[in-house]
Length: 261
Ligand code: SF4
Image 1: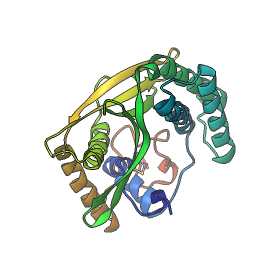
Image 2: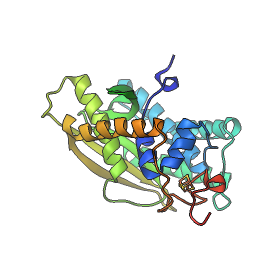
Image 3: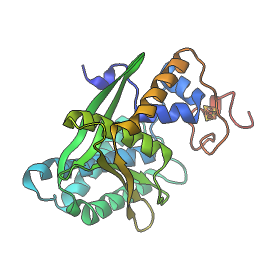
Image 4: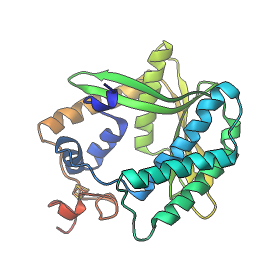
């Protein structure tokens, strides 16, 4: 059975539990899955297009043509729309999401992928935790020089790594450090390639740091603690912040803790 189907924690679960315990409870304890959004479908299909390019480039050392990569995106996006009951916002209908996705795939493929020689793509790892299921993750890309790269798509430009990116890449570097048999003081370079979706998409490379195993230790302790609190139903709702809104929380309509309920 795939590790995805076994009980596990993940970097995104940790972020959700920290953002709002009620979101985490409904998603992971009650199993209330939400319809994926158009932005999620766009991001997943874009990752698939870049991944297919990178998988073959490990052997060929050549990028696919822009038309081939565009074709992977369109096929994957339309399959998700057909199979996954995607929820599109009124202000960003399906056609616009597909068009903006094609533009970001092209921008990253033409401007950034030629500068990358991949060594591994979508590399799975499991980190055991004390008293909690293991942390499961997939590293988007490891370059030939050993850098760990995570690709993110966003509607907003950012110039600094966010806290959840740092936690996520700390876990990636920890797992990769163990795989490579590095000493605790040896570090691995990490970065986020942010592809900003706007009229003219923009690529921004944001270093997250040279990370040693030590960077992940507080994250591992936090993950175990959050899991312990979750199973005791002790995580707290957090209606304070941008995430507590109809647009950003799928449980908003039925949540008794939401802002103004
Ligand atoms: S509506 Fe607000 S309080 Fe309720 S789950 Fe969503 S983010 Fe949390």
